[in-house]
Image (cartoon, rainbow, N blue to C red; front, side):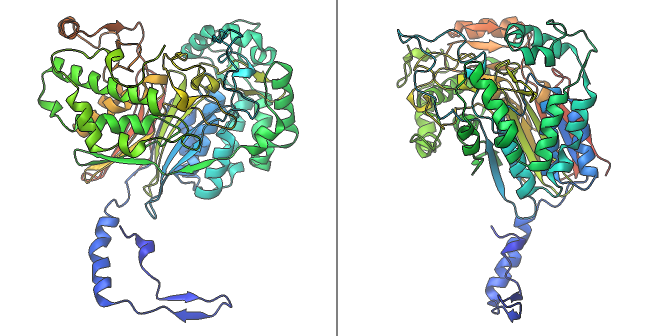
Amino acid sequence: MPSMNALPPTSKSSPDGSVKKAPVLHWGFFVLWLLLLPVAHAEGQPPAAAIASAHPAASKAGMEILQAGGNAFDAAVTVSAVLAVVEPYSSGLGGGGFWLLHRASDGKEVMIDGRETAPLAATRDMYLDSRGQPVARASIDGPLAAGIPGTVAALAHISKHYGRLPLKQSLLPAIRLAKEGFAVNEHYRRMAAFRIDALRASKSAAQQFLKAGEVPPLGHIIRQNDLANTLQTIAEQGRQGFYAGKLAQQMVQAVRTHGGIWSEKDLLAYQVRERKPLVGHYRGWRVVSAALPSSGGVVLLEMLNMLALRDIDSMAEADRIHYLVEVMRRAYRDRARWLGDADFVDIPLKRLLSKEYARQLFASISMQKATPSQSLAGFKPAGRDTTHFSILDKQGNRVAATLSINYPFGSGFVAAGTGVLLNDEMDDFSIKPGVANVYGLVGAEANAIEPGKRMLSSMSPTFLDSEHGVAILGTPGGSRIITMVLLGLLQAVEGNTVGQWVSQPRFHHQYLPDEIQVEPGAFSEKLQQELKQRGHRLSIKERPWGNMQALYWNRKDNEVEVASDPRGGGLAIKSAK
């Protein structure tokens, strides 16, 4: 489809600076171009900019950057950096993520892959004991659990190639917040209590995130001067300020002193990847989502391909939930069996996303009874800790970004003198085929540990696009991310409000364990009984999950709607028209 850039110029400069006339276009081609032009640029420009993120400070800082002349991509850098300061339990400079970008000027869509990589000294069995059994918590706590971070490289890349403002300006709000501090809220206290043993095991982490070795009281101000200095170094030196020089040496020394295997070569070798997003269609909507090494787009599109074969809107409630669960079960089975880093292993992607394969999976679904996960042919095995934001600017540029350090507060380890809290993303590898990770996800050889490899993720930043409008959505939530995005997407397609997308009751099935996980109050007693009669096992959770951040630009009414999940403490904010 042509864009404005597809129209050949009437003149062009030669290498010596002189101007030459371009060839005259054939009249028929010009008419064809005029006919296609409205299609290529039907989206126009939204009346307002909008940001939804998991923390008010991040949303406000992003809007500050937009008002200073930055675009959505500059704002994404700012929001990411601020979240690294105020949400240390969810993301950080010591973690990674995926930034899904849409550039309005030419329609370019790209996924910036800032996922962590395995250290070059990593081995297939590094978390197994002499008997071949997993060593308890070895892939979760401490620096041995940390992959090589990608966040800083990704932010520098986005700023350089897509932003308008210098990186130094985009990082200023985060530097300021790291110095001035932020107040501890109840969610922070809950996450810190959950991970207090890991935080206490790292002297620097305890000093940075606890008070006298205990969970800080409500309202306590967390100031991070070392982190502010690190951000300042990145602002002045770019990615080299983090991946080389004194800061890199400090991180490597701290990691190796405490049992990790990083080297300076690991940091120097880290590379951001630009990936082509996965694209599918569902009921007239174009769906753009994350590519591997995120499983999000593959699993989401697999599920949508199966859902498109039934009219789920006309189903009775129990039938609809049953069918959705069976679709989830099959897509997550394929995640476990086939998916990994496509730079290292061959993935049958074309097959998995084909309509023919969807029909085969569809044919295996009974509407009368649940399919036991272990009975599915193929692989037979022996969340809340991520963050997401959505941004739309007045030019129509958009960003959906999901970032993580994996478990709450990552590995719990801070490299002394840097303020950088390290991830524990190595747990997202399959440390042994059939052994579940901390989120209960199992994996096979495709996601085995290899030096330099990116571990499989569930992060699913997603765009929806149709003549009706544009939706931007995503959420944290570990293994439940993809099903939350699916349920939000279905709400959008059904024409419900953004507030309904982010607040609806949630349920989830991930193949193994073979159970429907259900938010408290999501299913009535009657519905629970009907599902149990079909052979489903239900696990009613004590707490709700997820923290969806979403927005919608209604093209027909030319209005922008934005919402932040009421389960979290985020902020949805919109500029004046």
